[in-house]
Image (cartoon, rainbow, N blue to C red; front, side, top):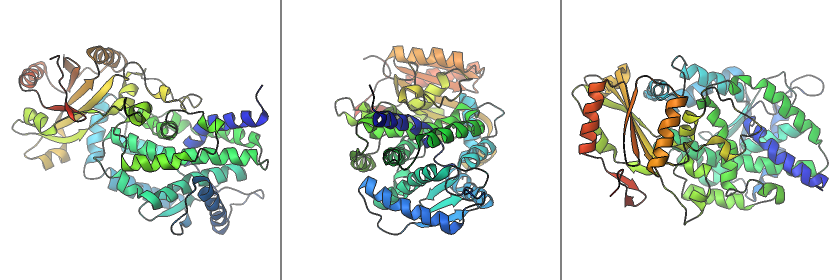
Length: 462
């Protein structure tokens, strides 16, 4: 029979899925017992108390004071516009994604990418750490009372980011590679997994102290689930943001999710976080299957294609490659789940929830978006006569066929054509039958170079 303490541990680990999901929701800036908003001074004081507890749990010290302040909803909108849409998705990247994601089937054709991003982020963010300024901000938004325990838990999550940043430079890590969809998910899982793991340990320690009531935590989770419909009902592409928290936590626990229930201290996570910073995971596949990263005998780097070779094959007068990207196993799984699949907060803590048989044979992929124009810059700006070429590499021809079949069933895209060779499948979007046949012949006559780790990879049996 489980002891009360063991039950509390396991319950907190399970609740961490939802707490991770709401970790950026309004934190300490909530009404107090008198019904009035806590002052900025009180918010900062609370964060300073939690800061010392975060140091103790991670076993690291803050190298310098963390600036703490509050922001209004207006200031948050300005921050999202600048940080997300100017810096991360600027220089035409957002516009290219607006074309590419519906083309491949990750968002509906009528989905406004920027507006949906804004709705999801604004609805979720309530406290955030900004690596550029090294500051932790709390959103001053009334109307919800999380209570002292949950406020502390969520602040602990964001302050872990601040502590990690002072030891490893998060901006440098995040920007160390081309910002593909797959890399963003992989590095995001490392960053958020670190904070979610410490947040969960914080929760366990707080509950076992006897100062707080588990019922309070469960009530918050229930209320937040009801309040989060905008996120839960968004296209699956956006709900993948939640995978960073729990899949990242499991990854840093080396696949043993319940390790925190057996050993709530588990201080080795900090060392493993530092190890991943020095040698980052290369794909969401490694996040979903931690042994493919941590186990040297099973480590599986993605297959990559030489971009220059593919661009040479695509070269035509007036047609330019305006965007390149990599989807990864997690997004390939989303493409082969039923289109109406909704996020299940009770299951999302499991990496297996985020993948399926059609995607687990993923070996690598590369997407090329083409547009017409007198030069590449003009083509990227105008995005006319767009086409897409998506190379997908699989572990075996059987894995390739499973993906092709389930992708066709889940995402009915009339403009899509494909051809295959060995463990390679190439999908064409926006090509008519003549153009597709010409490209297929040209491609198979002059195959681009592929590599799997330090070895050549061949799409057809040799």
